[in-house]
Amino acid sequence: MNLKKLVLRAEAKFMKTSMLLFFAPGRVNLIGEHLDYNGGLVLPCAIDLGIYGVVAPRDDALVRCFSENVPFLGVIEFSLSQLMYEKKHGWANYVKGMLKETKATCGFDLYVRGNLPNGAGLSSSAALEILVGTIVNRLENRQMSATAIALCGQKAENNFIGVQCGIMDQFVIAHAQEGHAMLLDTSNLSFSLVEANFLDYCLVIGNTNKRRALSDSKYNERRSECEQGLRDLNTVLDIPYLCALKAADLDKYAYLIDNPVVFKRVRHVVTENERVKKAFEALKLRNLQEFGKLLNASHLSLKHDYQVTGLELDTLVALHQAYGAIGARMTGAGFGGCMIALMPKAHLNEVLREISQEYQQITHLVPDFYLVTAGKGANQYGY
Ligand code: GLA
Image (cartoon, rainbow, N blue to C red; front, side, top):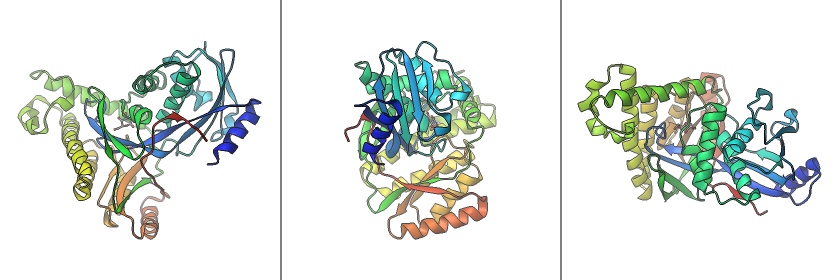
């Protein structure tokens, strides 16, 4: 993207000069799915696709925003004193939610362009929230930490948008460092970085292009199933969240969970947490074969126990595995969206073409592929 030209278009639209440029990336989760609302470990990284925002402060409490990705919505205008969800405002509701959570006081004109596919599970919504948080922090000269911005983003999603998401997406987007994945302990928000170096393999993101219909309500449903599992276990144990249970102790306490569906959800959660620990060590040691095996095991658990995959994700994962991936799995919330695969770099384009054709025959959908590297977190951009 030509950033100079983007700024010029923004300045022309709002008839301003010296506008400031910000960027917030999307994210991909390498492993540790549906653990961030269970006090578990996750291993995401930011990617080098994301959302750019060009902004100028105003001296009133109005916010005007325009997205080049949704030009037909035109310039959306609202006041900081009236931050209400309005369906017709589409993407700008994420802006409003974030302004509400950060208690913003300075109006601004915002011009946005993203190169992240929307609703594909690469966290376009969290990217937008963190973009706005970073802008508020800068325009109002606040000293909000990246963690504080991330927590506001999560609250915006929970309270304003109505998705009971965990903290993973917003946290990694606010904190990420280039070239690194982040092991985040969602029980206390401590984290360590590990180089995202896949040697002779390439991190491929495959978009199933299956619409994630119902994903929000299914997401909230999984969350309450986990809460049920925790309540059942706590009739005897005293654990603050599901990931406090060791996988080795699961059989011992299985009798506490009557509902077989709830038991499967719990089994995914506690076994996945163990896989994340092992995957972090494997990545640190550059043991990619082991890392890949853990990705494959994670997908199976999400398919059979957590039941958030479906034909499209399962097909795209299986095809990558058949065509040489050393590991592949769905990523994000599931029910459509994206998967990741570690593919040998050699002959990658030919291989992806084959995979695409076979996927189309089975699902009648055309997949998209993104070859990404681990990018940096949200920031003001010099260009
Ligand atoms: C979505 C949510 C995250 C996380 C993942 C599943 O991306 O926003 O908080 O729960 O699903 O791991």
